[in-house]
Image (cartoon, rainbow over all chains, first blue to last red; front, side, top):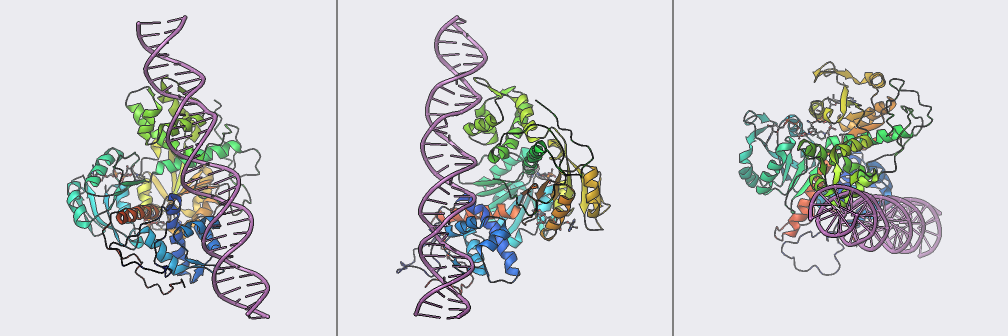
Length: 252
Length: 252
DNA sequence: CGCGATTTGTGCACGCCTTCACAAGCGCCT
DNA sequence: AGGCGCTTGTGAAGGCGTGCACAAATCGCG
Ligand SMILES: NC(=O)c1ccc[n+]([C@@H]2O[C@H](COP(=O)([O-])OP(=O)(O)OC[C@H]3O[C@@H](n4cnc5c(N)ncnc54)[C@H](O)[C@@H]3O)[C@@H](O)[C@H]2O)c1
Ligand SMILES: NC(=O)c1ccc[n+]([C@@H]2O[C@H](COP(=O)([O-])OP(=O)(O)OC[C@H]3O[C@@H](n4cnc5c(N)ncnc54)[C@H](O)[C@@H]3O)[C@@H](O)[C@H]2O)c1
């Protein structure tokens, strides 16, 4: 389970195993997905003075159930003190360690169109341990452009640069039709994590992780809920949208 | 997994519109989240000729298991033909209807900085039934700017315009510190669905749906997997403790 | 008209996740 | 020192989602 680091090492500390690796327990995916949220909440709290925080308080700040939060944290070891709460600084360190944020990760961004420019200028990367070290595009007109201190390079250089800079994470912000090709190039270059903004499914080897961010999907999910809410409306005291009443009538 | 949905003050129900209709069965959230993906795959297929598609084929195109796909579709009724497959056109119509995409939904975007500009110029909205009908910012320097045929308005106009244009969905692309205030304004204006790009938790009434897109979280999740993968390949003599001095060494 | 090939729709079992509820642990106060 | 209140950590239960495996349905063809 949680690797040892935390004085509790029971009895023997076997001569350091070379490569004393983390060897993580299988943290539930659901937990992993929430850790970053806890981390952000902790950082906010840290700025606000308090030294310790209760599961109840942190849960509220992160928008989750406190029992869930405690269980999540228990997966990474016991870093709280009963009757008191969690030490903010210690917990931050611990979560950052588990997420691997203590090592700065090199990221490259492919596709410097509309979205790519916004991403390149986003300071949320650096502030969380990520550093964009290279920008790539296939459009000759874009190659050479300076963005945030980086020069846009041609995608053919990706293979070489990725190795040089030890890039592990690639961000795809190209049109969907180019995304698979870009993913292939990234994979060939040794990139093992991809964040894909293009609305399409990527095929990659099993050892490569892909996460997708799709704006349209989010909107469609919201649309569904709008649809559902509209269909439930029975008797409201609402009086704010006199406008176009409701079109919806359908009827299959 | 649904996003947050917290209640703070059910208080009054603002923009409730009277409507009679569908009264959906409770579609599982997981299914709803996949429908947009199926829809996109179907559109691609539709362009490519075929009239019908098997669950196996569609599942592959959407990147899911075929049994899951069939179960998902079965939730919305039976629109396939055994021994044949699903009629592409019919299925598209059906999914669009369920998602409420047959009605053009008015969307407003708040915060026209880096990201906001990219979103405003994104054609993936219109092509999926959403229409950005208004842009808002608090910065006087931005108000009046023309973007994609729309004029940026001051956020104080949001309340009025939202009602006029019958806006149901609001997109927040402001800095995190302003997000809650913007969300409050949107809610007051009768908006019942919010897509939040700011890295923070929003408090909204129970009848308002919020979905969050957080780039940093995605990267951190990828980082975790990188960390995990690195720890499996036995070599790096990584020191396993977080650098910072842990004065707190709890334990004994 | 019946048969085989094909593909849907789903019952079922399993595993993951969430949530409750509470014992155990900790600090503080008397 | 002992008791009390507070908070963590976790066992257990229930719900949800996934994927298998198969019966039912449909088509095409001889
Ligand atoms: N703009 C948005 O707000 C937004 C939002 C969500 C998703 N997206 C998606 O993000 C992607 C990019 O959107 P955009 O608006 O920036 O598009 P864009 O057309 O403005 O930019 C695409 C960029 O990718 C480059 N490109 C094309 N093929 C390439 C290749 N093979 N290798 C490298 N670079 C290549 C182009 O030269 C261009 O610079 C699209 O898939 C879009 O659907 C965009
Ligand atoms: N840029 C990105 O790629 C990116 C990626 C992911 C998330 N984000 C998040 O999206 C948000 C916006 O990012 P950005 O890079 O565009 O920031 P930005 O600073 O460039 O733009 C923010 C805009 O919001 C406006 N604004 C501020 N307060 C406002 C208020 N009360 N009402 C209305 N408008 C207000 C500002 O005038 C500005 O135009 C941030 O929360 C950021 O963390 C950005």
